[in-house]
Image 1: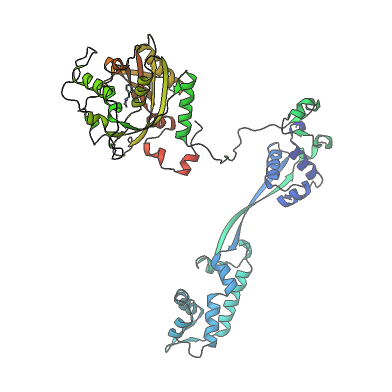
Image 2: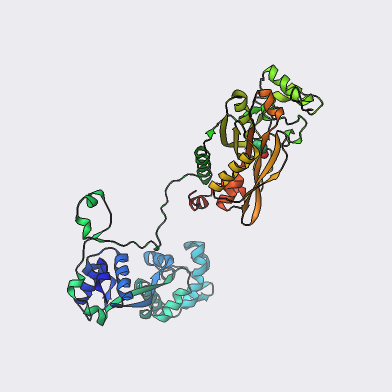
Length: 494
Ligand code: PHE
């Protein structure tokens, strides 16, 4: 046995045990003789020494009989049968109705049974006892029994134990394990000089590194596989952490963040994006229109431009949608149904400056709440406007984003949006299945030309909650917002 592998606590415990080779050591003796207060230290050192066969651990289980709460009450207030018996002795008229008057219902009921078993029964309407000495003796034995607890099961009267086990909450049996340690022959052979405790360094400090002391010191080994307590500190909600992570990724990719209002006009939310005024998504069942502001002012020329584009394509060469265009419909106030409303406004304000913008923000749609839908959710929106921007660049950007999020398998499929051409659907592979996460495309001339935009605009809008479900492995979207503390605590660091 190489004693140099012993840690300090083991050295101390073995040294102490060598002092009394024949002794069976109990926890308390070890703690006292080693000058420890923490049981875990003694148990740990004992286990270490036992693993090296330097000591033997003998574990013994014992069953102890303890007082439960009714038993404790009986000690404090007297056993019910004792109180009933005194009442019987003192009462001038020990009848049933008098008993019921002198004791609470919950005592009177079981009390009658107890008296009967002790040999006190009814005779012509009154309680009657033939053998007072016997009753007194039984009561005395019972209280003596309770007063002797806690006590090892082997030492109590078996009959009385059975009696009290049959009464609710009088006694409980607790199994305790006691450990004793005995030194082995190999343990005795370890020589004293090997049991000298060395100075062990727990923590590396700048002072220590500056001095020369670390050169010959012993460092404490850490067992990283041991179970440890999880620190419970305040932390961000997983959705917030996810938003932060997405922000970092886009910032790292050279994008700037756009944060804008979610109260918008139908004009910017839809007309500017060439969504026809009779599009089903504009219906009351799909969009939250506002009572306040019911309507928002918009510049006349702007509405004229949209109107021309929608009716016949204006000067863009498009045929438009045909039919009528209503300025009143444009002015309606609503809660934005997508964050594309903000990117289009940014482009309108900065039509000639190439840019890369992103938004992670809240949108609203009149959805019934279920496992995969919420009426309030978030979109991850972005645009790239620059000379020569093309479809390949759009796909690469989205693939790079998802790869950075940890989803390297991404595919795109043809799709349709009124404001993009070509249009794409973005899908990510998760647990072997392709999941649709959002839409993308290049803005159509009907959208960009009236704003004076010269360069192609790549655009996308993706669901944040959908992505969160993948990241957190959820199958119900509602879990994200129900403030289930236990669940929140156990979420991974994102
Ligand atoms: N706005 C679309 C949606 O809400 C997503 C999208 C954005 C599609 C930009 C194309 C371009 O689903």
